[in-house]
Length: 75
Image (cartoon, rainbow, N blue to C red; front, side):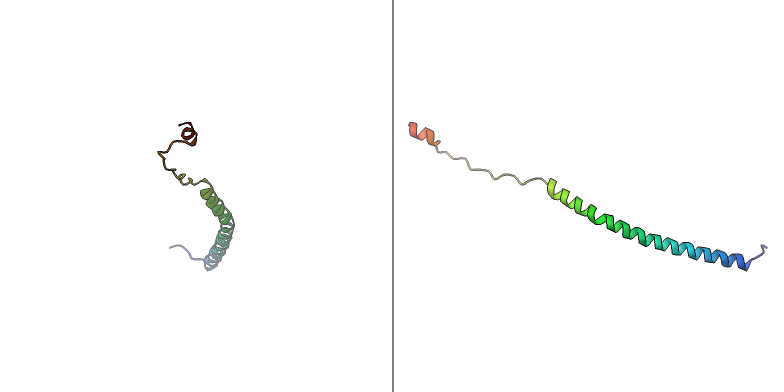
C-alpha cells in the first residue's frame, strides 16, 4: 500500500483551489471583453444588412392607349 502524506495532499488541494479561482476570474474577464467587442460588431452587421438589402421593385406605370401629345397635334 502507498504511504499517504497529509501535507502533500493538503498542498495539492490548495493548489487546485487557486487554479479554480484563477480560472473563474479569467472566465469573467473574458466574458466582459467579448461583450465589449460583441456590441459594435452586432451594430455593424445590422447596418450592413440594412444597407445592402434589396430595394423594393419600382412601381409600374400603367400602359395608356392614348397617342402621345406630339402625335395628337399632327393628326
